[in-house]
Image (cartoon, rainbow, N blue to C red; front, side, top):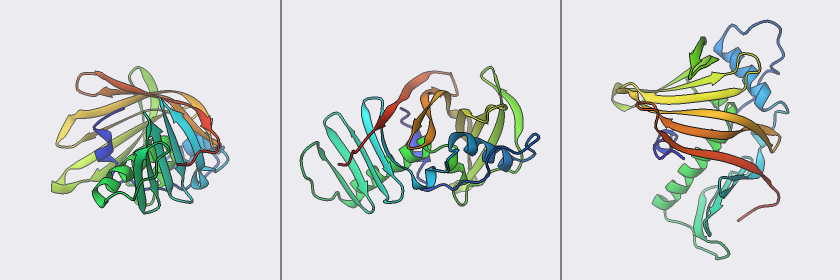
Length: 232
């Protein structure tokens, strides 16, 4: 798992909207149409906005309940919980008092991180997402994709750019990368493989993280399957 990405996700909040069924005739003409078709592929039942499920991620268990604003991550004998505006972190089986605000902010960052990554591409319909109007057909690491771009303005006049790459036939999310305008050769990219159904959503099964500057492999995240009836 990347150590750089969580700080980039602070601006990304919960809850995505669905639109379109991905079945329109003819090729897409705008980035929004590509995104509609991608969402129709990954969330054909329109389940993301009411997503409530637990799943394995590497050796951890992740719980995301969007309607109740509940998140938990458990692993290594400990768990972290963000239950609306109250956070807890303790050994499994113990009862802990609410965390202080600084520690709670760390748990909320974990929540936003996992919700965003596992909620793509639906999260690109979050209100205020600055999606460029146009898309391009391009090659990325040896594969042809439809590329969408999102530019987030940052302090000091810099821009944080995210690029998302979709299969031109199925509209499945195949890769994405992010970098900043003050360091355009920096950032990271992720190559994706496989899909697994969790809570009625087709999540990406495997994510491999690389540094853009030298293609160094940083790590791998694997979604292992859904877990029923988990709360901490």
